[in-house]
Amino acid sequence: MRHKAYFLFLPLFFFGIYTSVFAQGTTCASLDPFCAGSDQLVFPNSNINNSTVTNGQPGPTYGCLLSQPYPAWFYLQVEKSGNLRFNISQFQNKDGSGSQYDVDFVVWGPFKQTDDYCADESLSAENIIDCSYEPDTEEEMMISNAEEGQIYVVMITNYDELPGFISLKQTNSQQANSGSTDCGILDEVLGPDRMLCGVNETVLDATTQGVARYEWYGFDELANNFKVIPNEINPTLKITKSGRYKVIVYAKQTNQPDEDEIEVQFFSEPVASKPKDIFICDPAQNTIDLTVNSNDILTGNTSEENYLVNFYESLQQLKAENPISNPKSYQIQETQEVLAVVAGEESECASDLVRFQVEVSFVPEAILAEETVICIDLAGNITQQSELGRDLGSNYSYIWSAEGISISTAPILNFSQVPSFDQLKLQVTDTRSGCSVEFQTKLLVYSKARTVLVKIEGSDFTGGTTVTADAENGTGENTTYEYRADTGSWQESARFSKLNPGYHTISAREINGCGITVSPKFYLVGYQRFFTPNSDGYNDTWNITGNNEIKILNLYVFDRYGKLLKEIIPGGGAWDGTYNGRNLPASDYWFKVTYEMNGGKRGSFSANFTLKR
Image 1 (cartoon, rainbow, N blue to C red):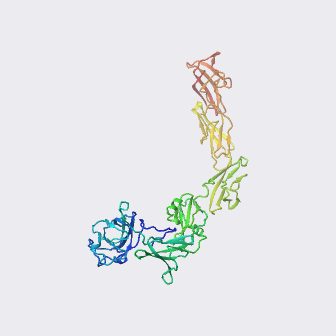
Image 2: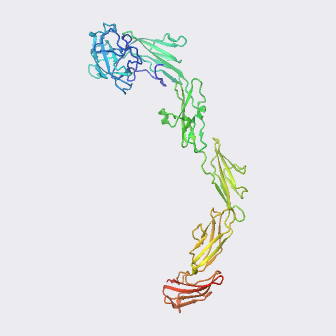
């Protein structure tokens, strides 16, 4: 097999284009035909890797070429009379990249088609048309006044002796009086070897200008040689069987034979079957073995050849022929689609693509809290419906269990009465993949406080009042409550200070929402800092009232100069802001109170308050 395999049927191979590459003759007796039009002709040079002829053969006169390292021999035939000017260059790589190498040449001619142009007398000094031995990587070859049908012999040498490629291009083909070369006979008319997928026949086409006759051959594996195919004399040959084939063409004018061969192989088109989706059970897992789906994907293929499964991240990567490099340990961070294609190892024939999903996570996190609170009343009845779990859809199954016993298979679990256990487990399984995850919650049962008791310490007359609430636990260990005075803000502390004199309540609230308990009303002894005797029903009078903790003995009101304005009798009426029936002005006034604490201790206290109008 001489050429890189192509995987699509290729039509007639055109000569003289940039990609033409053919073997070169190393002696004049094995010279090859060539031509060059406006397109560039590229072919391998002779070098140590492809030739054992290290110098020009003895006999010919090489003119300016003092040495002829690794010669390549060619002949060209004039198609159209005129001047022929060629550019010859030599470089490292086929596409013209890499290093440039020194190239030299010599041209003999003109010869008739019937001449022996490889004879020493033909390759003489008198017949040298052009020659260059300059140390250049690019040369110009000129054949002036060439006539139609003439033959010219060209030898190109590789002075640097390095593997590379020679480029030949006619540079004056678009100019007036420019001649042209005959591209009728060239090697490799059949093109590259063919690997054919999903078809059972193909046509080989050796159609070439200037050919007298065609001969077709097939390779006999048993005899290990080519045998002529009888009665096949046309330029084309229909092939229905894999094998090696050869065509020999003979030029009309020179009867020079030229041949090309090709290998043809027919392959069934691979089949890719859609596999199941892949599920990753552990959300922390970041790699997946995609090849677990290979056997399912390969289902339906014959044993004609070995097959590979290539995986791709996207259509763009598939078009770029860039498969996932390590499918056994593919990095993945989220649910995504993966593409797969089956390819023959030998033919590289490819199937249609199939798609499958790789799903990283199959259940939400924290479907159950670590702790679940059940609220009950003081009689032990559940005060509100308790629902645990979440319905994830028809692709999931559920098992609720407590103390090793299954109690439900529903997605949502309801409690209508307090359970006898305090630990609950839930196993959720994805029925598509078999992946499962287990959750566990601790059941905590709480109620509101049974009572709220209040302890009062101090008064306005003894440095201020402090109220401390004591919530009697209802149900549940380590029950926590928060508190508020009257309709104020809730707080963690059960202690309150700076409450105004008068009636109050303290509420205790179970922090999980299991109820509120309110203390009985209590009264704080103290004095009003101001009053507004305007008959609106709010703070119209001023007084100090005792309670069980403190008894008021005497209460007197004075103006700022110490004049007694009112003696308020305990249990009697309050002061309305008048004196002898006359309204007193808005101002600060003073009072003195004597009191007796529970236990018999007596004291007195004086301070000012404000009358506002």
